[in-house]
Length: 42
Image (cartoon, rainbow, N blue to C red; front, side, top):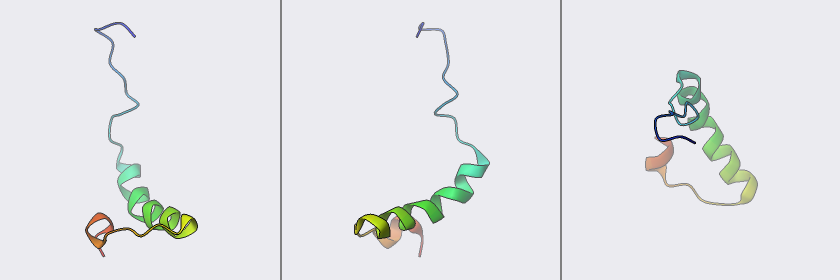
């Protein structure tokens, strides 16, 4: 990628802010991985 190009892939999206708090605990449960409560805000 040229140095002057910008990637929108890493730009935050309001839909992501709604999805991530649900997605992280769900994936952790599926894979049997604990998630600290600070991460999910519970």
